Every structure is written in C-alpha cells, then in structure tokens.
Image (cartoon, rainbow, N blue to C red):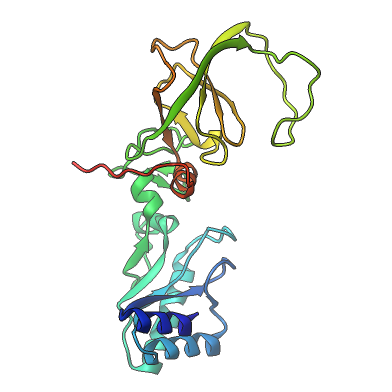
Length: 267
C-alpha cells in the first residue's frame, strides 16, 4: 500500500502525508505493535520513497475490539514512537493517540505525555463521551438523552410522496416483511399517514428522529419510510419536506447514500 501511494503521488505530482497506524490491542487497523520488524520496514519505506511525507504515527481504540484507551497503552504507544525516532534519526510531527474514546483521559488528568493529536469527529459533532456515555459541555448536541445521540449541526429532509388514511392493522394473512421479520400490530383505528421517498437503504429509522415531536415513524421498507401524522398540527401534503435529526450512524448512512443530496450551509 505504501509503495502504491508513492507511485500515485508521483503520477499526480503531489506529496502524500502518511499517518502510519499501529494496533495497540484493538485488533482493528494498523501494524500489530509487537511486530517491530514489519513496523520498522514500513517507516523506512515512507521515509525513502518519493512523494511521501511521514505525517505521524497513529493508533486506534474501542472501534472493533472495544479495547479502552488507558494511560498504560498510551505510554506503550509513545515508547514505540520514541524507539522508531531514535532508530531513524527523525521526529514524528504527530502522535495520534486515538479517537473520541480517548477524551476521557484528558478530563481525568491521565493523558499520556507525548500524544499531541486526536481524531474526535463524533465527539466534536455530537457531543457524546463514549466511555462514560454522557454529553460533554462545549460540544454540539441537541439532546441530553444518551439513547438519542443527535447533533444540532445536521438536518435530514425527506420528501412526502403520498398522504392518505389507512387502518393500523393489515388486512389478510400475515407473513414476513421485506427484512424477513414478523410483526405485530395494535389496532388504533384509521390514521392519517405519510409515505417518504427515503428508506432503510438511505438512513435506518432507528438512527433518525423527527423534528416534529407529534409524528411517529411506523416503519420502513428499503426505499420508503411510513410516518403517522394524525396527531400533528401541521398540514402535511405531498411535496412537503419532513425534517429529521440523525445520530452518527444515520449521518454516515445519509452521506454515503447515492440518493441523498448533501448540502453544506454556512453563515
């Protein structure tokens, strides 16, 4: 991969900065920390190959193996960096010590000396501290419910393509839905509902919450979302845009869906 990056950087006449990842125990990404020979060879190639710049050394925690960042594994990471610096006579610009799960070490005064970089997109954008599971003052969020981790920076808008009134219990013999799951229904009589041009393929319903608290998400198919609008004071019509807040997973889904248009709004 490093050699391929170098060839492409030369082809594009650009300098590519490499943050070399070291796996400190989460068995996720990077070179396993005990494999020093392989790690040294990777650093050597980055330093020698054309159009590459050693941006820094990085590690990650808690994403796959759920290994928490600690003072101990942070110090081990810094020690590895110092050994590589001594061997190659260089200095890493950045030692990137993890993601937003590492933030709790800062608050508790247990930050490993030498780590000068974190990747905290989810904390910055959603305000959630993922170790103690709580909101952090000073970061963006629009809910104090840790079961609804949404941000006030993002709004998902979905177009209403159908409005009608239907029974709340299907008519006929029941089988499985489009996701191969069985369902039960509560008879609430006939209710007014809207069909949205957005479905599970775009953003799963469990990762989105309506800005209008008087509506209820009934369910989804792959390409549609069904909304109960009977209790809402708003007169929803075909063509209207319904607004939702999303959590981190919902934002990821929306940004990678080809049918969701992403618009950046600045003041």
